[in-house]
Length: 386
Image (cartoon, rainbow, N blue to C red; front, side):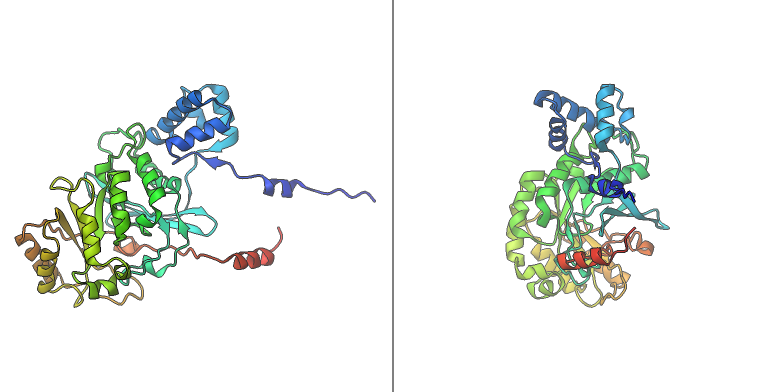
């Protein structure tokens, strides 16, 4: 009896999946062109062409790159793809807010949210990590353990996904709906600063996505030693997730304060490169009923911010399943804001957006779970054969 082995499935499984060029930085694109065999000068030229087609025009097929030689287009099609991450879920709120759950790999999912009528026209809130290590007690994301950092390409891909959905190509389209980027999604950006800085370089590239650095805001819960580096490397606008005016309460609400207290945090804020009246620091302050919303705390906030060019976003608490807090009464929030306004600080009350789809501030959370190597091995052994 003659027996033949079918190795097709094993060969297919061993073949690496083609990499997507969508979201890659210009240096990364150049490195890929050199890996194809192009000499450095020509690789740099081709990388710039690719950057413009992918990030300015938003093309998703190499055949549309009309100024790239046909044989190279064919080679690129055989080697790479231009697809975005898989969208595991897409929800649209009654108020026009949109939320995407992007699947960056098996078990690796992160959320991004488009908020219309924010900034010049609309803002995209992007994630820098899957999960978070900070455990802020009012934040739903803090209930999900850190799975991993997102790469720069994965961060940029969130912008491409939103641009696709909003019909936002080419980048210089008038009346475009996405004009601002805020790093206020899942994770602490300063614990992933290398990838965040590279992503901002790509997002702000005038020949690509072309969202200016002054329309990009990075929010931190208070990683004080990294704040100056953020400014030096990105020139982005700075936001601080503050939420309390004294160390005792902030230790409870924002546990990283136990490592970097308010004195250390504000020393770092005052040293942020380029801050001034035209580049104010944004302070985010979630309004928690009976916790941090008294008029005395409003006056303490004024004292704390003295000498810092600042505006304060007052955020009505957005509830999530099992949350231990309630939102402050609206009259209380308005009285709190009036104290800040009287002291000369702009203190808009942020209108809750996307609450019905858990897309509002502090509500983002995916179901991704970080698994140990042993768990992964057990799952592989238990998986049924195809």
